[in-house]
Length: 123
Image 1 (cartoon, one colour):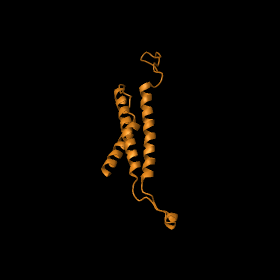
Image 2: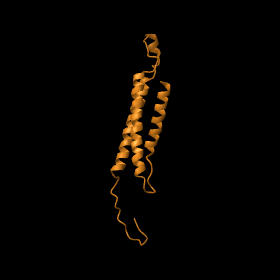
Image 3: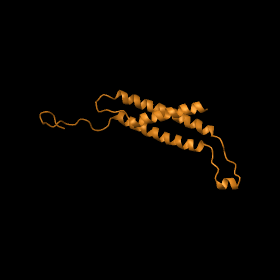
Image 4: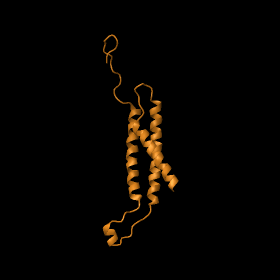
């Protein structure tokens, strides 16, 4: 980096500090939990009858598995908590002009909030 007098300015930063690492880890944990929520929601939905199911007259579950939906809702509340902590840390660290909020945390917070609202309304 050069200053006004064309002298070389030593770069003092060595890489991301502990807070940036925490923000990235919170985002990674949140996405892992969100993937688990999606898997639980897929398992909880009503079963679809296929050709062999009809021929063999296999009984299928026709309603949502509320136990799995409850676990998914609990995980979404944990995601909301993790994202809120991450966004709080991000806001406290937001001092430079080029600092940005972690988009991943914002998107995940919105998705988890909508998921919790939909789950609570439909119970």
